[in-house]
Length: 372
Image 1 (tube, one colour):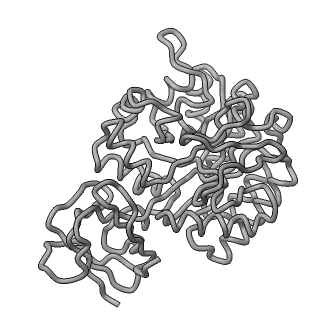
Image 2 (image 1 turned 90 degrees about the vertical axis):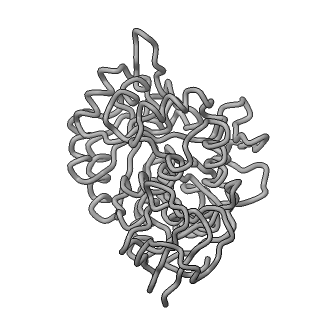
Image 3 (image 1 turned 120 degrees about the horizontal axis):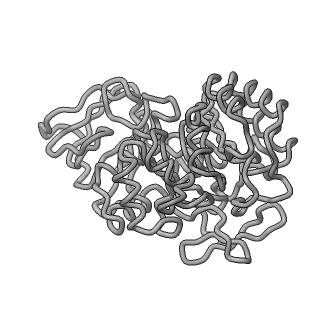
């Protein structure tokens, strides 16, 4: 069925178009051209590709790694689709080996079944630096062993995308190189490494950095650390735009320094898409207050932000250009996920669309051209 969308600014993945109309047919974009007055009048706002999120721990009341992993994946993907996310990497934070194995197996089943919105998995740990553990359980953090590497390489062959967050201190350059050669997106995070260690890991194949500024060695004028290597490097850089994890000034610095390499993540937890105020992370209570998710001692434990809310914060508080902010939530993460059919509105791309008001409120969504 052919559809035409008009009456809004249209973001194609790179820039915003005024006075344009988007046409789709059979679930795919067919063209972007002048508005002739034909089609669905959206009445203002912005029409953009569906969001892509590479760090999603939970949603809809489910947290990956707790309970049945198959059910958790279904619940998480469905919850975030309601929030406008067309594709995501459900994320497992540091867990016991048997839990990791169960989640990897569930991810492979989800991929084989074509679970809507499922792009693969993100394993955040357990190969981290305990000095920068954040909310991760210290007892489960450990260096990568050869059997860990083999399990990851096996999973990478059967998953559409596997992202692994690790600290350079917890994996060798040879292990990082092997993962990268197998198509794994290796991301550096939860690390107290030096700039030299970070650059060695990047040279070995680490292609990204996890939640810039948070849980990593900071940058100073004599010790740039992982933060400095990320800003001055060539790897993609993830960042949490919630106004809690990063203040506006360092956010703007990251946007200028990383430019096209910077992408947004929600780092969502089980409460995403719900009104609940508390959940359990294993045996620890996570509290939701004033836009923050924290352990009882105040340690941040994920984020409480949706992609539309992230857009509102980036453009309203951090002063980020509207098209730049949209690219951070759509095209750039889609490319990292290996999905050039997502995150842009070019002929042949999936007709996964979100309509946002002038204040970035999500008003409508379509997946493969169907209202969702």
